Structure formats: structure tokens, C-alpha cells
Length: 307
View 1 (cartoon, one colour):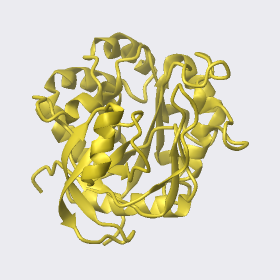
View 2 (cartoon, rainbow, N blue to C red):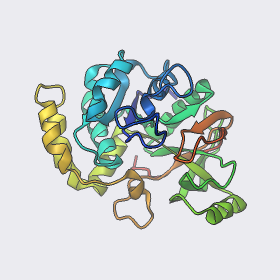
View 3 (cartoon, one colour):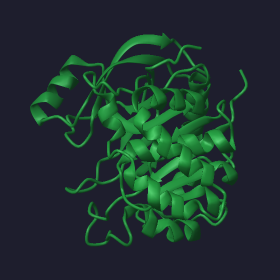
């Protein structure tokens, strides 16, 4: 199977609170060189080099940080960096970028949403996992990645795995259905997850075809479509910033994670894939640095859109 056209969207918002005092509103953690001489944002783009060219890298960030992103990612076309005039949480941001990719790359492209707050020590394996995830996504699934827990961490949301969707992929990992998503638990509940097995830390990464995402948004968040249409119509023109500033604040403020809840009438997410052996660390919560973990066994394929 040939690898579909992959675009990477990096949500790079953040208020600069998690690594205070070094991280501030003007320089949140993704713009800092915390782990190496490269910033976390630059490392996020570095690890997909060779898989995704600069012209298929996109960033959505706070408007005040857009120029900083353009300076740090000088190879990325300036038009690919979108500055939100106000924060409306993750669902409007991801939905808007999917609508923009539909215009620029077409509905068959696969969009990988990769936050800029992870440390991944084996980028080659991570790229292999993304390729495999993109192939699953091209078949109509919405895919997410999970991390096998090394302890009862209360700083992560959890994913409970369901039935096996694919026994094996080219990356050497299986694909499972998602049984359910769980918000950040208490320690007692997290310990229960580890005892029961089948639970993984939610890495917050999503891979789906543009067509799949657009279908899900039209079905479950239709109230955003008129706004997306206005903004996308102005994309690439001199009117874009003014239309974005006028329309984006009117979009409903809602987190994509809320759309994962089993009881949500606006559920848009659903499936998982696992990838053994990659050194992985999510960046730091308020209480300090997470210990290194390994990414293993989870590509989840949860909502298939009828292909």
C-alpha cells in the first residue's frame, strides 16, 4: 500500500504556565530550548523531516506568537502558520485546519495533529508509526496514539482498548478499537486501570483523512461550518487576517477531548494504534518533569466514516 499524502498540523498554543518562571505568556514552553539546542516546536517538525516536507507543515497558534513561529520555522510557508485572534480551545482550531487542508491539499490527504509538547527519542520509529497510522486513516478511520503506562499517572487522560482492528501494520504494531476515553483520574482510579490492564495514556495525537475529519465536523459540530467556510474562502488573500479576526471568535469554544466522551452528542473521535519501543516523554506538568516512558502498542481506529 502506498503512503498517502500526509500533512502535519501542530497546535502550538499555551499560556506559558507549566514551566514558569522560564516559560511565560510571551514565550510558552514550545518556544524554549528545554531538551536540546532546538526548541520543542522545532523538534516537533524535525522528527517528521523526510516524511512531511515544509510545505505540508502547518501550525495554529496564538496570534501573538505567529511571528515567533515564522522565525523559528523559516522553511515553512508563512501562509501555513495561522494565528488565532482569541483562544477557542482545540475543536475549532483542528476543524479550521482540516477545512484549510481540504482547500489546499484535497479531501484525500491525511492530517496528523501533533502537539508541540512531546519528547520522542526515536524519531525514525515515530515516522514509521505515522506512516502506518496514515495508511489506517486513509481507509476511513480516525486514529490516535497511546502510551503504555509505567505507573498510575494522574497527569494523563487514559484510553481503554477494545477489539483488535488489525493484527499487524508495516510499523510492526497492531490496531485496536477504542472502548472509551477517560479524563485524568484520581490516583486510586489510575491504579485500578493498571491492575485491570488494557489502559493507555492518551498522547493527544490524532491522524485522519481530511475527508474523515470534515465529515465528522459536519455531522457533530455543524454550527461551525458557516464560520469555517467564511475563513477558508479568505485563506490566501489579503482579507484573511481580518476575516479570521472577525469570524473565529464566534466559533463555539469546545475542547476536542469533550467530543470523545461516550455521552457526548457531538462525539467526533474514536480509534487507537500502539507502537513499541520509541522513547517517549510528554512535556512537563506543573509539578515537574515526567520520567521517560516508552510508546508501545497503540494505534486506535475508532470512528470509521463509511468507506
